[in-house]
Image (tube, rainbow, N blue to C red; front, top):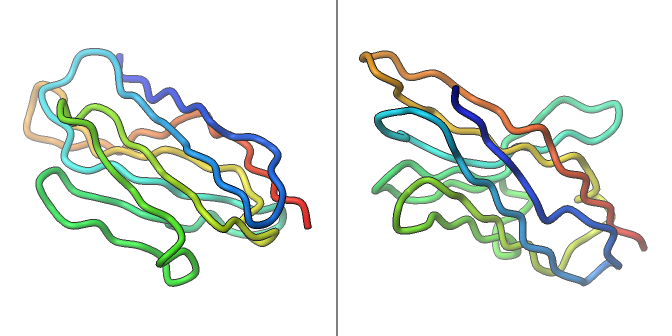
Length: 120
């Protein structure tokens, strides 16, 4: 069974920084892409940043220049460095990954979410 486990969410003042981490565990053959989404109260879940294995990162316009996504060398973990945080960044952040188990299909998996709260 594949699991994504996130950590790093916290309460921080505006202008501060946080680093989110997400690690994939379980039995699978490869991870095709990993990324971060967020959902604020009363809003739809939205893409924050994603990066395919061996590819270039993609960012939401609202976080460009402030957030940086990265992967580890084993390509089983993804990180989100968030700088110059703003109150509008407050949301539950979810790790997402496209994972190929032991067939040809790639399934999308989600973490449990980690709360980021930015105070003004």
